[in-house]
Length: 502
Image 1 (cartoon, rainbow, N blue to C red):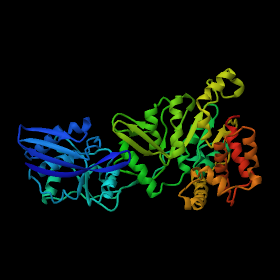
Image 2 (tube, rainbow, N blue to C red):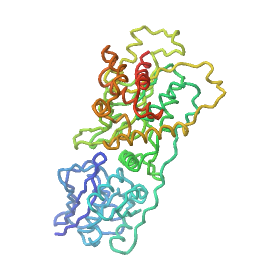
Image 3 (cartoon, helix red, strand yellow):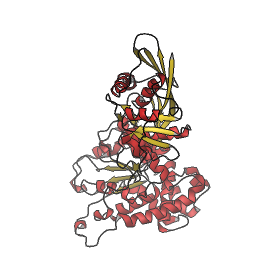
Image 4 (cartoon, helix red, strand yellow):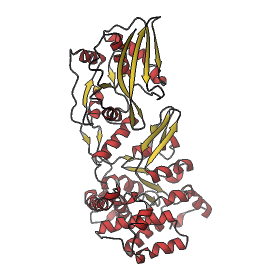
């Protein structure tokens, strides 16, 4: 009886766990048995691995091969284990020495001819390998740029199983990493392309400076989508930690570009209004995949025609809006994905959506029912409501509007002030600050809170809505360079919460 051993990584959500793969070659009829809670894709790896080993010029053992993946209670999903399975069998058959296998982690899917293909979740897998104390990780050559984003561990790329075997025997070298190029292009246009709509532009600037959620209502063709698409151009570049988080999510989702794997600009995600709950928050059979809310992490989630989106889909947004992450329970465990994004909703005021309100033919009940899918608890989590109106002379404006670069300068300055203020508590934007902190440790002057108290007393606002209005007031104060919000800042913030309902 001969034993072989190799290591790979199981990725659940954006977290990885080291998996030990043992191969036992015993007596009996030639067969392959895979144990350790494999899914269908991993079960099929028996045929892929055997064909790849044979087509790489190596002999498959003549006997009963048992492959065990440990921890045995952890569900194993995907094809990322193929390379490690093949190495464990070769180690058990004394075809390769085990010296380099002991400290290495192998990631990759095998083709029948021995080529090493890219698998999902390479970046979080490399991060997990480093956390587990491994010194070397071997990945597919096509994923080398992605894996090289992780410091503190040796990353090598293999194009074929033959190359890995030669490296294990000391007869060849694997490819070293190359510098990963960041995706620094902002693809969403410039704010100076938006003509007129000064109030909506100001609202967008406030939203960008404080990380606030926005609702835009108005007739079709007025510029709601155009404004929303330009919000990412007002946001600062992602920090190193944010860039790795966003890149890891896109890696698990399988949508990471191979040539520019490091995502350094805020993502913009705009799902269709017919999207399902699973597509929005994540899901799928077996291990849950990240949804739109996670792919928009540290960026913008834009829901156009939000009144046409199913009520269950909209209500599913309440938890990630409040907590900044999504937890999806499935048969194979609970997947946790970050989901701290800026939500932008856009809707027409009624089903017929005329250019002028006086031309509306909808009954009053139909108008109320149209936006009725936006429930009170969801609307409470929207900081800024903007009702946009048409401008007959806007298309002939002579002066050029401010560009995104100019506005982004003010946004970055306001964010730096907020980050310095909340640094002790670990928050970076005003939108993240809990309500009890605003009411107790950073309480506003009594005269500034009078408008909020009046709105609460009259039932025009909930306690959560009051907290969000105060957060917006802090952002307006930061943009004007003040030390603490005054009555005018609070009035502007309250005005933002009332315009959308007009």
